[in-house]
Length: 133
Image (cartoon, rainbow, N blue to C red; front, side):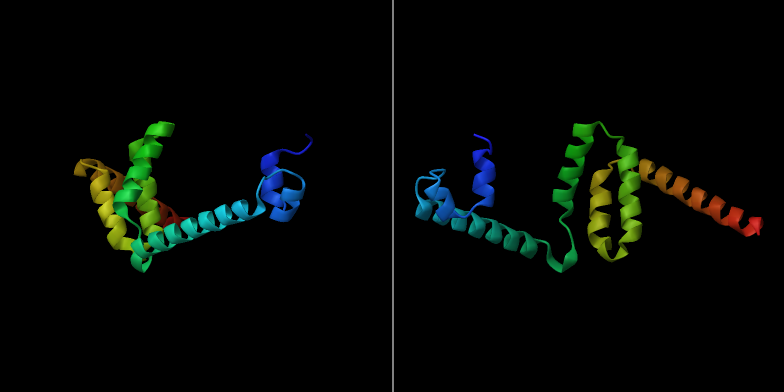
């Protein structure tokens, strides 16, 4: 058994797999594959319909972010900073980002402190450029 079954099933066509006795029924395998592709296609259509106008679902995104914070033991303040940087880069998604930011942090003081730090940093950079010439 030099090559694993899953690799053969992934790379070879159904008639070859049937002749090599890797699968029992060529027709059943083909039907199963078509059903799986159809299901994936319908799920992608559903997701695209749900994500209208290029917006993302803030509730889904918030759950995914919180899951990543817990899984990788991330600093929530740094994650909020990254969310704000993404917001800066994609202002056309402002409605979704505003909902996400509002739901992400219960404490408005934290958001104010992060924004104040970002503004002071940008102000320092701008002043350094101005006086360095």
